[in-house]
Image 1 (cartoon, one colour):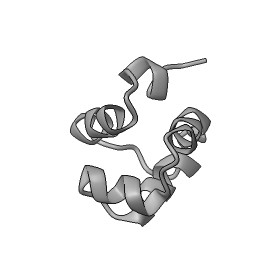
Image 2 (cartoon, rainbow, N blue to C red; image 1 turned 90 degrees about the vertical axis):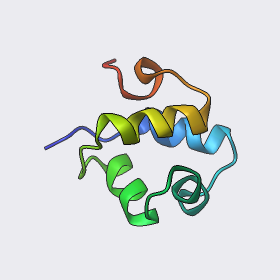
Image 3 (cartoon, rainbow, N blue to C red; image 1 turned 135 degrees about the vertical axis):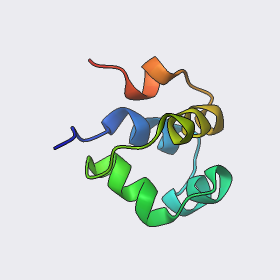
Length: 66
């Protein structure tokens, strides 16, 4: 089981993006974004990079360990 991705959710909210809007930007479904944030989906590195680009963050900022 993957840990809940609070850092991703915070970065998304900071950018004033809904799950749906982020999903559209990265070419994924809103359900995928929700599952990543809740820790129920392990995204590919390609998807991780797209998320980071959309949020203006580094991989470590969004997916690094605490």
